[in-house]
Image 1 (spheres, rainbow, N blue to C red):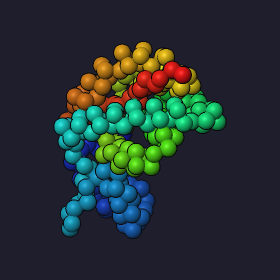
Image 2 (image 1 turned 180 degrees about the vertical axis):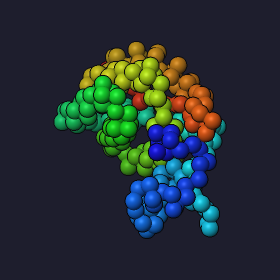
Image 3 (image 1 turned 180 degrees about the horizontal axis):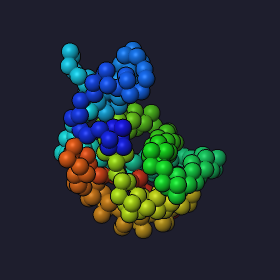
Image 4 (image 1 turned 90 degrees about the horizontal axis):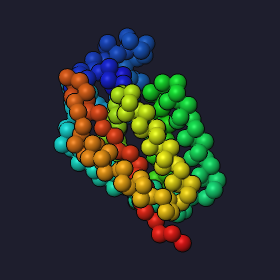
Length: 217
């Protein structure tokens, strides 16, 4: 409900109403609150009703700028270190991503997209990078989830992923200049925070996974 935009930033989350809506007791609901708070989606307030975390546009824009850099490092390292089996596994995940786009399954698409980003970062073989990426990703989770509400932008995002996978298969050698020339426009779009999606303050922004030029052996 939060990621899909049903609950606006700052919206209260009354326990009684949510327990009745989902047919659960207060104990599992409060455990769910803790998880959502850890993901940065809600704010827990002592002796007060939890609320959906307000969006700080400047902070999100700055976070996206850093995430772009981290994604670039992860992509470059993964291209050098990934085995053929690793790339085959990513290819299979990408095919699922394309199918979810075709079926207009936005929530499932976003989860798969996140899994692909995490896997590429894991393949970079740098635990510190993975830890920093995971922490920062939690801060921009909601903004990234809403990036593809615009149908045209969603289709563009799929094409960008397809292009990246082609470059990853080629170990990014020789072809990355093409992606790098196309990339700055998307980076500027993300770093500005793009636009306000609703009165609740949602941002439509995305940090695509860029390719970093590797030396041709």
